[in-house]
Length: 228
Image 1 (cartoon, helix red, strand yellow):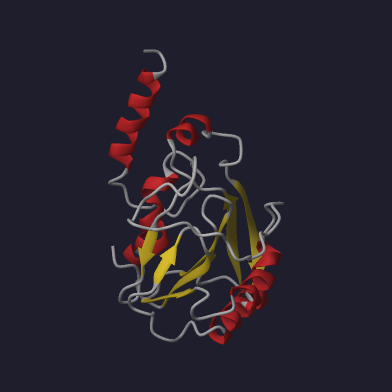
Image 2 (cartoon, rainbow, N blue to C red; image 1 turned 120 degrees about the vertical axis):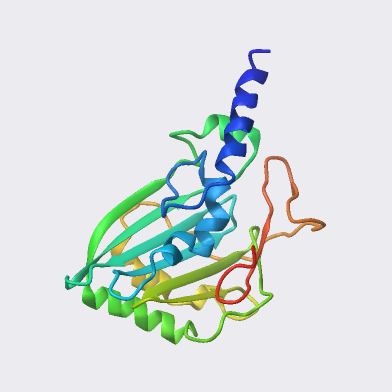
């Protein structure tokens, strides 16, 4: 009974948090899985995207969700000649063992950094986005598999929100320039996981266990964001 009680508490907490909208952070390993879809959709950025507001950038590197995820949030203060980049690196997962054991340490814990970057660095990010096709319309119906490698980017400038995603179907993930331009503001100390061809098991539903303690889910791109 002593073992069941904490599981019940975690499940109850999960039910409450599941309805939450992302607040821009991914550092809490217990809350993270239940806010993840909202975060990847940029709901918090959309809610504050208006003319005259600070420009905001978010880029997400999914290097197989259970192995490594890197998030990059950049805010440019309208009256400043610099910007702030917050970088986080962590491993995902939503198993019960993970929830009970990864509150503040271990492989699911978040490694983060927050540094000031120059306008020159921010321009380099902008140029990398443009070079990679960010200005094109989002690919409606595009599927993002958690057990594969992909990049997602979203930007709010002058009240205009833009969203785009890259998978092996529309880009060479290993050759996208994002890693290089974001590295100057990445002080997490966590090595970048290089793309490789993963072994993919049969997929029959939105969620499934591809193996013990593994996690699988899909996200589908819609009109300028996720189709949730």
